[in-house]
View 1 (cartoon, rainbow, N blue to C red):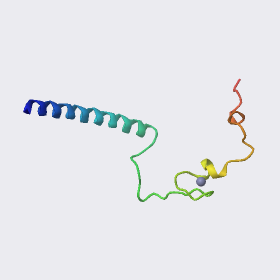
View 2 (cartoon, rainbow, N blue to C red; view 1 turned 120 degrees about the vertical axis):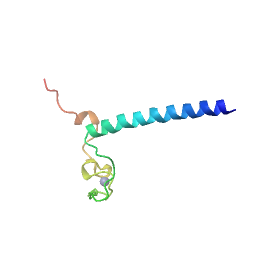
View 3 (cartoon, protein in one colour; view 1 turned 45 degrees about the horizontal axis):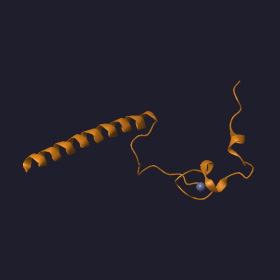
View 4 (spheres, helix red, strand yellow; view 1 turned 135 degrees about the vertical axis):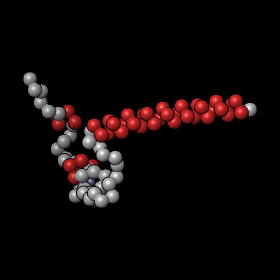
Length: 81
Ligand SMILES: [Zn+2]
């Protein structure tokens, strides 16, 4: 039945259009936060000085958590009032 195939193709194209519009919306949001389109081959990635991973830097390294930060609530900033 070519009718069913036509409907399936129509549905697929609608799905593609929907996904493309979603992708564009995401791209715009990424641009808003300063993300310019992904991996840049020429850009030097600074490795974490604590463990050597390039996924994060030393500030956010899990290997370098200070022992005195026992509870998260103690690290919250004081009230502005
Ligand atoms: Zn690290």
